[in-house]
Image 1 (tube, rainbow, N blue to C red):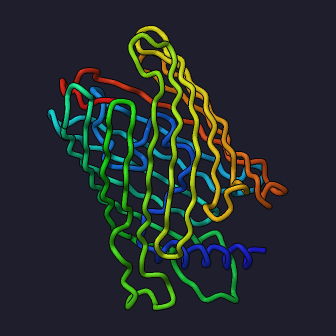
Image 2 (tube, rainbow, N blue to C red):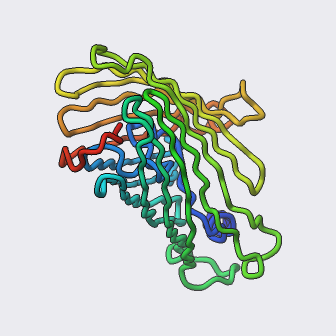
Length: 314
């Protein structure tokens, strides 16, 4: 059994460790009022410092299932710029990925009267992949020391907003892999493209609720696969900028629209500076026979209100 675990870990190492990319599981973290996770162009949108801590447990019911913890924070820098930092630790058995993403964004106001803005963002990514073999005791596989690799890459993004409409486009891992170093049988193109767009209905000062449908598409250039999230959120607005919300996310492969990968109900609340959200991804493919889904909890703080007077805010 230990040999089987080691072979599995080595396979994961060959798939992820040599990918030179930031491979973070994207579920519904971005829907917990934190789109900065998927696009650096959102860094610094808002007149406060936004902090979101996220914990995700995949494949509930399976021993040693993957776990991920992350911390995202972004803030306004001056009147037209923003900065952000994303830290993460993603563990799967005896394999582990950890690292960070440092982001910078610049925001321009096109039309104050119509709340029309455009933003540009860029991120530097550092990813550390490590295989811990210290817990294995095997004699038929020749391997020594923990295997570790440090990878570097970049993301670029653009965001357009007009009143209640928004759309962002992100190109992640824009650098190709060095095939001479890692072998010609592996894909050299690591780029993936992400489109996130939506509209907030009934967004006015006199309204006490908002309905927000959104769409999130991911396309991976290396193998041509792509997925789509169809999302719907209902937000009830309370006094003093407090609110609670509930929503649903439906993810599918783009060549299998009627066969969802998972369906995720979710809910959250913001009271004063404190934010809390919970999401549960229900697995709908063959893995449903072996696990009950994926839990995700988000805890956040919105602090230092009024760090900028710029109108380019959420």
